[in-house]
Amino acid sequence: MSILIILLILSTAIEVCAEKQMKAVDTVPPLQLVELPYEYNALEPVISERTMQLHHGKHLQSYIDRLARYIVNTPYSSMPISQIVVMSDSSVYDQNIFDNAGQILNHNLYFAQFSPRGGGEPQGVLADAIINRWGSFEIFKQAFTQSATDLFGSGWVWLACDEEGQLYIVAEPNAGNPVTYGLTPLLGMDVWEHAYYLDYQNRRNDHIDAIWNIIDWPEIEARYEATGVAENSCQTAIERMWEE
Image 1: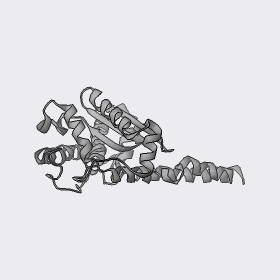
Image 2 (image 1 turned 90 degrees about the horizontal axis):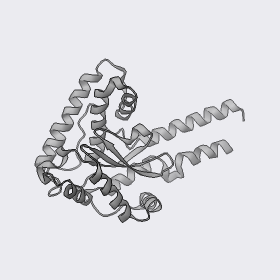
Image 3 (image 1 turned 180 degrees about the horizontal axis):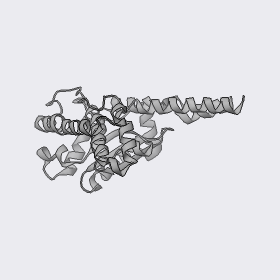
């Protein structure tokens, strides 16, 4: 097999793997308000109806409206949301675009990860990966909670994975998202005050503890599996192509 053919195969394989990783991220057009899989009052008492009305209907909509103004007649207008975040993060001139696109991406993932029948623990390959990384789900949960508790000011804490399925806890200020590091975000904890202040006032820790009761683990598992890690990872697939 010639080196040119090998390079073409490898390039195609890498593109396919990257596309798989983004399946869990680019599920909603950048300028469209994500539809909720539940009613505004469905997550009570963890998150109140009033908080959902403001958080989803007002805060997220304002990010969408601002991004629409910033990207009109620019190359960003044709990009999926994850690409807007990654590309705008690489330029100090695009801070406004990054801030609003980041918050759109973050909230799209955030609102879709809840269920009134949530809670419990993950299953399948995600559960195995958590145990392999932290030793137990409880230890992971404690580490994640501590990161959310310790994050100063506004921001997000993420469970994310790389292309081989390795898991990480990533704490990001403001609108940060792990896609800027080449990671796939799986689970996000919003510690901006607008996410909890009406319900918990200054008791951020109580909000963080309560959120675990509404996590839709099948949704998080689906995001993990969408990256292709359940198929022995993208890296393994590329190595097999090289061997052939």
